[in-house]
Length: 96
Image (cartoon, rainbow, N blue to C red; front, side, top):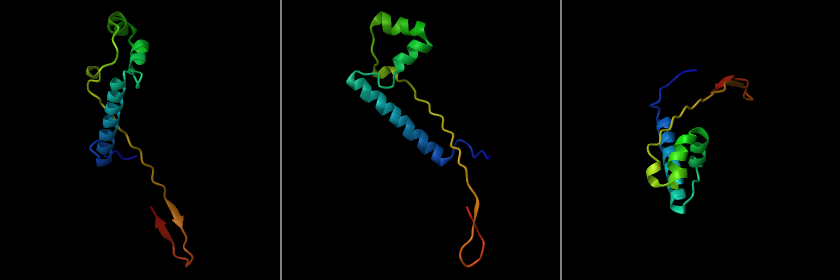
């Protein structure tokens, strides 16, 4: 499988779209007072001590400053299938 690099135009467009979607979802949840991405739950499960120090002791909720930098990694795998096509006239054409 060929690696065409991370600077592929499709990769960059997809990264931008996903980053914008995550950011807008997070901010709409903050405006409604909800943790729609369940980030507090992930913090509780993976970094319990940090969760206790920030959320539990201070009774904090998710706010805009908690988003920070969104980093998206995209890996597109495209599989091209080759098959033979036999048109009615009997000539053979390779279709990509």
